[in-house]
Image (cartoon, rainbow, N blue to C red; front, side, top):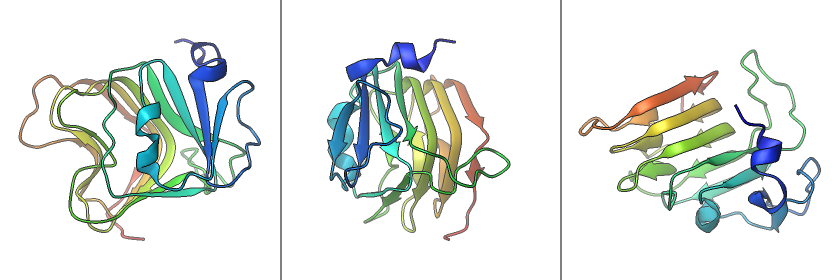
Length: 181
């Protein structure tokens, strides 16, 4: 296991805030401020990069994000954790809310596949869509860590119609419930 502070040192990390606070952002990281549309981060989801969302901030998206390439890649959180539950999920985890129709997940792999990617310390909500993180095929070496989901038909996982190539998917310390709240 490699140290993320080394793997994603300096400009290999992008911290994102809906406002202008970057307390807890790693030194030397790029900073994006005033961003509320989560889909605008698509260009930052590339191999060798880490995107950290500010704890306590909220984003919306009506589009699925599909990484342009495999990893290593991490999408996580920065800032102080407030009131962690027994799993370590922070009450102020970055919240991403899916809006619009019953389309695919917030993070989706329809063509390229996920490989060597970590999603961690996020809250994902929807009232109309079927999956928060998932894929049609080739999800490999994926870690879902301390993810909280609400309002999804299939919160975490791969699709039901094509399963070839899925391998080494770890869902650890997550809270995936059907509740819409």
